[in-house]
Structure formats: C-alpha cells, structure tokens
Image (cartoon, rainbow, N blue to C red; front, side):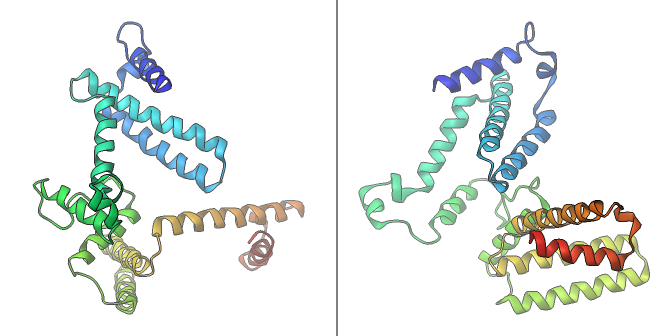
Amino acid sequence: MREIEKLLDVMRKLRDKETGCEWDVQQDFSSIAPYTVEEAYEVADAIQRNNMDDLRDELGDLLLQVVFHAQMAAEGDIFDFDDVARGIAEKMIRRHPHVFGSNDQIAAGKKAGSWEQIKEVERSGSGDPSALAGVTKALPALKRAQKLGQRASRVGFDWTDRRGVRAKIHEELEELEEAVGLREKPSIDEEFGDLLFAVVNLARHLDVDPEKALTNANYKFERRFRAMECDIESSGRQVKDFNVEMLDQFWRKAKKRVG
C-alpha cells in the first residue's frame, strides 16, 4: 500500500496546476485514452515475448494510466482511485460466490455458466435490454466481432455447427468477388467486412481466439520474413533484386529454418 500511495502522490504532484508538469496538467480523459490502449497492447506484447522484465515495466505503465484517469476524476469530484479499487474488488466478490459467498455457495462450488449469469443480472440494470448490451465499441474489431457472436449465440441466434459457418464464408466470398467484378468500392469494403465477420464466427465455433490467432500469425510472418531478409543479405543482394519465384524459394528456406 505504501508504494500505491507513493504513486498516487506522484500523480497528484504532476497534475498540480502551479508546480506540476505542463504536459500532464493539460491532459484530459480523451487525450490519455489512446495511451491507455497502447499500454495494454504493450503488456500483451511482453507476455507474447515471455519477457518478464518488460512485463513488469509495462504493467507499471498500465497502472500509471489507471492512476492518471483516477486523479483527473478526483479533481472533478467524480470518483477517485479508492472508488476504482473498491468497485473492482466488490465486482470480483460478487462474481465469485463459490469463493466469497455463503457456506452453501462455497460448498456448491463453481457452476457452469454462473459467471455469465451474474454478468447478465448486472447488465439488466443498465437500461439497455439488448442481448448485445455492454459489448464495448472501442474493442479491436476482431475481438468485438467475437463477443457479438457469443452474445447472439446465447439467445439462440447461431449456426448449429461449423459447417453452417463455412457455408456462410463461401457465400460471403462469392458476394465479395461479385462486388470486385463490379468495381464498386463501397460494396467491396462492405462485403470484405462481412467475410471477416463470418471468419470470426468460424473461429468461435472452433474455440479459437481470433485476435490471438492473428497476433501469432503476425509474429510468425515477421519472424520468417526477417529470416528471409537475413538469408538474402548474406548473399550480398537485396529483396528487391529477386523475382517472386526466387523470393518464394528463400521464403520456403526461412520457414524450415525458423518455423
């Protein structure tokens, strides 16, 4: 707790209008929000790289974002850091009756679907009766598509199995090809989005996290491409010096070497 108090005090001093940092004083919720998102991604990147030193540092950067928002809210008498900490603690206790509940609830243990049932009760008081209520619009598009599909599925709006999703993907691919043939840019954009949405639904039926899968694919592509560049550089030439057929040979070699 001493370290948390020290961090809170640091932020209060940075935001002091008389003696603080000019940049920090000028910020508001909207200007800081992009940094908050960026820091969350950097935490995920450190985990992906299994770099615990970087993870410690990035978690600190992310915690600073929470403290920054809480300090700005405190200045407007909206809420403070204690309110944030209290709120999440109460939420975790409420959502884990098998750990924090009555003796009977603890004895009963965790029940399948109880987490979502409790969240449904919480959402019922939000004023939005839709099954899609609370799916944050600021989520990465793949993650949001996944959550929208999950919510719709819970109320029975879903394919019975992955074969139905595969048929939908083929349908969307055909519609995309038709739009491409007509050279209608707005239709191409729309149909490409529909295709991606269908692919995300296939991922859901396969129990695959599409955001994580694409992230891993990105890392794999980068790893292989860099290895290919190294091979080409060792030959004394550059990537642009080779045609597609020759580059494919280097690519296959890199795949075997780095996986």
